[in-house]
Each structure stands twice: as C-alpha cells, then as structure tokens.
Amino acid sequence: MLRLDTAIDLYSNTVTKEDGTQETQGGTSIPILLLGSYEFTPSMAVMARWGVVHSSPPAGEGATVASNLLLGGVKAFKPHNDIRMAAFFGLVLPIGGGGGDKPDPAKKNAIGTGIWARSAMDNAMFAVNDMVFIPGLGIAYVAHKLTVQAEITLLQLMRARGERGQADGARTNFTTGLHVGYFIIPQLSLGAEIRHQRWLTTPAAVTKDKALRETTSFAVGPRVHFKLGKTTWARPGVAFAMGLDDPMMAKEHKIIQIDIPVVF
Image (cartoon, rainbow, N blue to C red):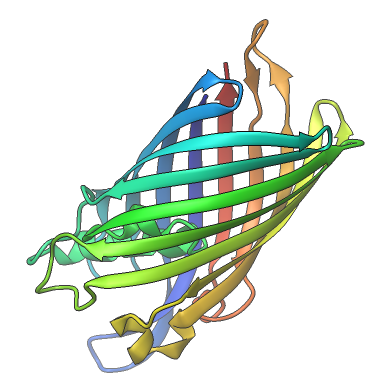
C-alpha cells in the first residue's frame, strides 16, 4: 500500500508589530506524509513513513523541512468474524530538520507547526531530536456496513541529539482515538473520530504552559472507494478537523486533511 496524507492547517497567532501594538495574524502549516507498507502474509506487514512540512508563519521567515523517519511492523488478529485486532511497534529515527544544538530558527518553528497540523497525534514524526519507541494496539468491529475502531499508542521519546536546545532527555506521550465509519453505498463512506493526546511525564514545555499537557480533537469527512485494477483499490478521503480545547482552540486551528491510500 502507498498512502499520501496531506494536512492544511490554518491558524492564528498574536504578533507584536514594530510600533509595539499587537494584532492577530494568520499562519499556515502543511505537513505532507508518505507511507508505504508491504504485507508478508495476510496478518503481518512492515511499513515506513516520512514527509515534509511547509510553514508560513504569521511573523518571521517560513521554511520547508523534512520530518523524522518512522519504521514499523504490524501483526493482525481476527478473534471473531466481526472483530479485528492489530498490534503495532514502531521506531522513529531523528533525521528531520530543525533539530540539533544550533537549529535554524525558521526550520525549528516549521517542524513544530507540524505537530498541531496533525492534531498532536503524530508527535514522533516532528520530535527531531528524539529517537522514539512506539507500541500500539487497535481493535475494530466491522459488520453491517459499520466500522467502529479504537486505538491506543504509547510513545517513549529519548533524546539523541540537541542537548543544548532541548532540556528533556526523555518524555512519555500517550494517544488514543475512536473512529466510526459507515458505508452509505459501496463507493462512499462517511467517518468521524475523536482523538486525545496527553503527556504522561512533564516536559519543560508543559511546566511553562499547563495547556500543553493534553489536547482533544475531532475529525469528520467522506471517503470514496473505487477499483483501479483487478486487485488495486483507491480510497481517497477528505476531512475537516479542529481542536476541542486549548492549545488548539486558542490559536483557532482549522485543518483540512486530504488522504489518498492506494491498496495493491
């Protein structure tokens, strides 16, 4: 499978002008992530994910910067005809830009905007100073044109570089989500999900701003399903996402996500 996943995040921020007055200005962050996976058997697969982030901030210089690289494996189980389960383990390598002891300020800001453009659910891709270990578990009910899926993921971040620019040597993050999808017709489905992210440890950023401890967001949108060949399916979808609390609500993040998976 190949999957191209693009988020367009429109947000606002208060900036100080040259005359000392403040005003609210808009910014844009666009992370583009490419995922490839290969099934060795119907129940085992490996995957890799990498991307770039383009940022146009309200003030200062914009930049385009590479993300980290995620490598992982999935083991699927089917304990019942209508129940599917999957266990995941991933390793994120800190190859992204905007990190190190003397990061370029524009690139550092750009990679940070990717976190919120992805609703804080893909932090590991943008933690460019950290090696990240990611175990996860998912379970889904799939029957009668309905899919109900829940996931939990633990992220253990270990600093691999950038000691001068990052105080935290280790951090632990937790994410979870619930997705509900329904096929209106075989070619069209609608989906909605709610997601939650929380820091289980207390990073320096959370010490400074308690609103960064956790955030909850939702997304909703349609997806179409059509064949490209005998065994090839395309399932492009578009969704609107936004935060339900701070810090995402404080900066009025409004996100359009365009997801294009092609299954061979």
